[in-house]
Image (cartoon, rainbow, N blue to C red; front, top):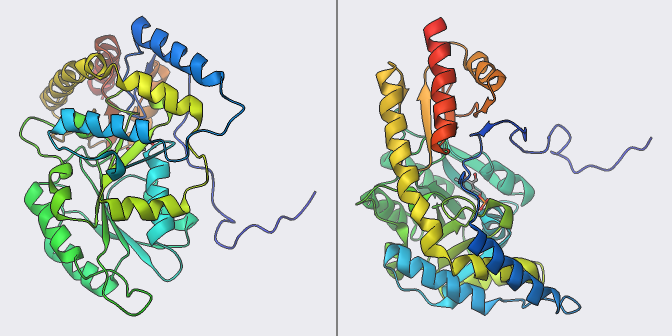
Length: 374
Ligand SMILES: Cc1ncc(COP(=O)(O)O)c(C=O)c1O
């Protein structure tokens, strides 16, 4: 028995995490349900074997080849040309955003986001001793720009996080709203070391961007005019490589250079770098599944509405639906049928990830039975 000197504030905390259960339909953490093809597996295996031959050495600390490959991918995906030096990467976009908070947050500083939203943001803030402040979204989950602007001007946050498409709601942020937030962020950051005015760093978390509907722009398009903007992406979702742990961001060179100060040396292993490069070479095949997942999602929204439920329009690979008087009971009944979804978001609502057609059939059968039973 020992009494450990746990940091004040962590005493009542528990480790974050959705349940990891071996069930036929795992629809709770917004993964891509399709495993990589044999061709992708073979290329990754060869690349990893080559990297293994050099494991006595530390990996490339600033991984320029991978950063260039990610910049090329973003160029192909969104039409925005970026230099490799504008890209930063880490073990998942969670770690990328933690780097941003480590670099710009800290004691006496604040991070602002718009709830309901992704539940890890308060943890980045807690872990960097940054205050976490939220502004509630409107009932349709859009951001109240007036309330946001007011709060930003009085709080002077170091970091503002907007999520588009947002998790768990699936809603994307209109470009005009983001432009306004970026404009208010100018000069609204905390006082600099010499008392000088600073801009708040605006993170646009685009973990689900590849699933957005046609015509919905990416915040990448605003990078050229906004050196205080950081757009985070991940290979965990559309790219179908959650197990790889590779997230990244695109920003100005100035912003990326600050992140290089706080990262641990060699944080991205040679194995991760090799596997990510090999996977990126297959981007067309991997992205091919995105179209079918989008179609499955839109069909799911229609089906849920036909059952008399509210299902929010989604630009992501999940749908928020409800309301249920006892959402926990609905979750449990689906789980008993081998369908794992997520209890998250506004009271009464549940979130389901878009899976394979077979998984979605299992979901519809199970939920249909629950609704019929009443
Ligand atoms: C909105 C959002 N951002 C970021 C992440 C983290 O993704 P990763 O760390 O796997 O890149 C998730 C994961 O579910 C998410 O929903």
